[in-house]
Length: 292
Image 1 (cartoon, one colour):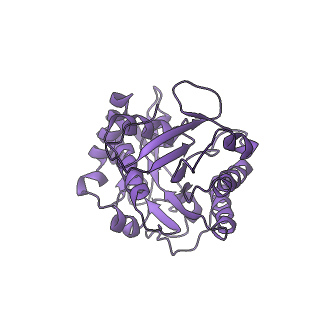
Image 2: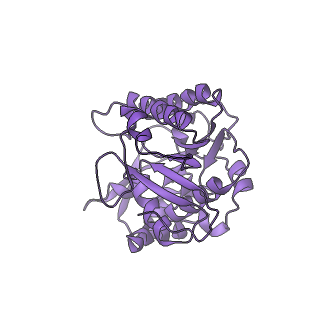
Image 3: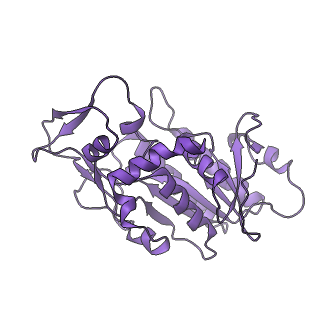
């Protein structure tokens, strides 16, 4: 079920992890909208709604058996990975990255965009983190994502063009908007009387951003922060979504502002001012179901 790009010279992109949180947000948009690229969707277990059945941890041999002729893909978009939850093995993230990169090298897929996370920075300052800042992850998830990034160095030496995307909060894939039940959401309230401020991106903006990056012919930077250019307060998102919420006092004043400097991304893919607003981010989150 390949999406139909209207560009006859479009790149064919293999999306690994199409069934995950972010993949399920992006796929409906790409399948129902004109794109710069043609997307092929991987799943680990046979599913007629997906194009390729392949478990990367089983190695490249099963993948190669399905190939004939010249390399069919110009890039891999690696979205797969272990996300925070109970009793999860975060070490699988590095193993998964290594397996996918090894396969890309063996079958001559020249470019890989790897979904990392802003969690690699940690929370050691209140100013936006740029790609040049030190990485000091404080949680297991951030440490695991950093290990994925470090794996890339070896495969760059083999000639792969690898860009690690340090993605901020994606509306619809984040804890704020996915853990909704009948109880009010509790937001930490800091000394200034406000809640957390974070770098967010709407799912449609993310789909357009990835599509733009994948269509560029020149090598991408090794690290790119990915979010809308301006951060947003979490209470503004909840209010825009008409979700019931309450403050809860915290005894510390750390972690209120964890944001990204996205100047590097903005130079590659211009954003509108609207894409940074809580109202537009929530509109995109709600509109995803219309594509499904």
